[in-house]
Length: 234
Image (cartoon, rainbow, N blue to C red; front, side, top):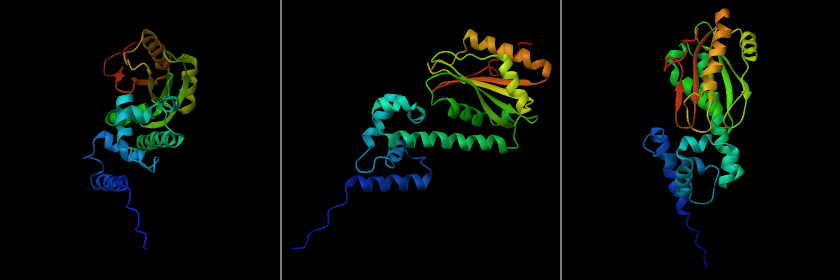
C-alpha cells in the first residue's frame, strides 16, 4: 500500500502569501496586525500566529508599542525568548539605521526632524525608566554622536549641568539636542524638566554652544521645547 504524502499545513501557505505580499509592495497593503504576524512567523514556526499578533496589538496598544516594549513587559505577557529577541533585534536594527543616516546626511537637523524623532524613540522606548540623552552636533548641525547621560527611575532622572557640560566639551560639539523619555506616556514637561533645560542653556551659552531642542518622547507622542518656544531662557 502506497502511503500518501501528508498535506502541507494550511498556515504554511498563508505565510508564503504574507511574504509575497510584503515583497510586492513593501508591506504597504498590510494592516499592522498582518505585518506583526509576518514578523512572528520567523520566531514561531509551527502554528498560525494571526490571533497572537492581534492580541499583542490589543494588549500593548499599537505595533510600535509591541516592538519597543521592554524585555520585562514582553516576558510578563508570556512571550518566548525567541520572540523577545526578534523584537529587540528589530528595535536595535532601526536605531542602527537612523543613527548612520543622521551622521552621513548633508542636511541639517532641522530638515531631518523625522529621523531625529525616530532616533530618539528608538534609543529610549525600550526602557521602563527615564533616560536622559544628548545628541552632539557639529557646526552644520549634523550628528557627531549620541550619549546616554543618566538613567533614573520610572518618573524622574537626575541630571547635573556640570556633567552635561563636560560630556559636550569632550565631544567638541557646537550644538546639542537634549532628549529623554516619559514612561508614563505623558509628554508634557515637568517643572524639573523645564528647570534642568534652563540650567543647561545657561551653562552652555557662555561657551557658544547652542541647545537646539529638548525632546520628550513617549510610546505614542512627543513634546518639543523648540516647537513650543520654551528655549528662550537666556
